[in-house]
Image 1 (cartoon, each protein chain N blue to C red):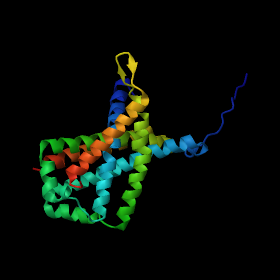
Image 2: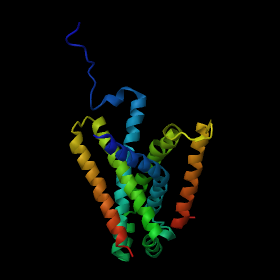
Image 3: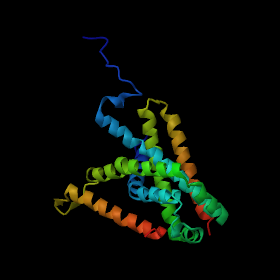
Image 4: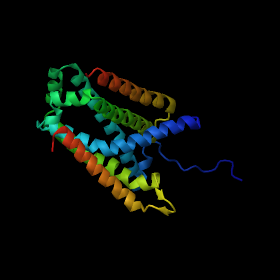
Length: 131
Length: 114
């Protein structure tokens, strides 16, 4: 009988570096910073919108610039590959759908998500006057 | 944490994750357009103000912000744990407080647009 069982030391701060799967997990979790950032950026915009046309105009101008272009472009790619696409991929596991006796195939659920996403994105662009 | 409480937190996390997955790419793309100086018509003051004044517009903006904030808060709590911060009560109180403040601000700003 061992009184002091061996406990393999695992770092609490860098444990995810040991395995590619863990790294991807942590990269996915980090999208929460982007969600926070864009939520508060939108809130700041709503504050400007609620105050005056001048404030809204100043908000739009303050968001321009090469640095912001690069930041948003990187953020968009990061968000797509570590939040949107993995979330859709996971959907059939999180919300399996059954019609009568038959289980809806995983791929049908995933494709459904992509179609709905495309339609919603086009609708938002239409609403914003991009299209 | 009690099971009932956990269900609420998890429900908000899942709903917010789904909604942000669907909506945020378009939102970020719009900020990207603004950054390039090409502000689309719908985001000019008149048009966007009209949208945010309508009850439907208010409801859409509020639900997206509310659920996204709570989704991010819950995930940030997990991130803190994953990076070795083991003061969960403090972290939880902080991130949920940030989400609560954001939710109240969203309601307040949207309410004052008319």
